[in-house]
Image 1: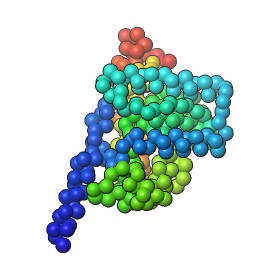
Image 2: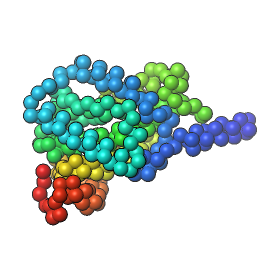
Image 3: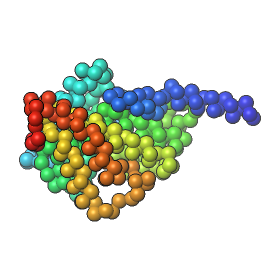
Image 4: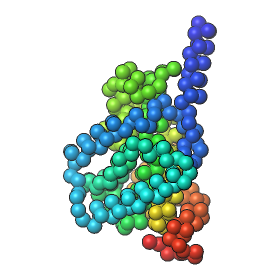
Length: 286
């Protein structure tokens, strides 16, 4: 019995060692039991289903701003990754930016660059720079493979993958419904499968902070003033009216923590912004 437990523990440890990788650009270790590219077919199918069953806005100033901000940040992402020898991260990406009429204050980016903005978040964005704050943040989730990381965490918690097992195909064979529920839950398309609060949520807060950091970089390189991010998240806090759970039970950093972290990152982001716009003493915003 002791030998059996030892073997199981050894296999589990081996999986964690083999399946751990570093997030490009930040160096954070993340658990990856599935390859992010495995999610692309599922992502593209789900994205099409969302568009087919929603009211997608095809024209108007808000749509134009979302698409313009998306393309500008896409170019900055591609330039940054190429310059830092991470261009392979974008293999298989099929960028798309859409606006859906929905009162939800939300936006998301599925693996492969599939972005949706709900109209409910646009009044808080206010302008194109505010849209760029959200766009940079959401695209950063895809660039850092947060979807695959969250899937890995969920599959492990649900027992769809056990010691010595890796891969989306294995999870679908073991527990197809649970695997599908975890995927759908990542983007609010359906209720997520139950999981341990203590295990899953702290990692999600790390991902959110990481997306804030990368988002500042990408929007600044695209020529959007990163200082607008502080204003945006302060407006988000006001819009919530204080109706949020404590930080330790939230998948997002508390508003005051997020703003504080952004302010610490701001000097480097402003330097990138000034470089991208040719300003040496810029204090304004565009």
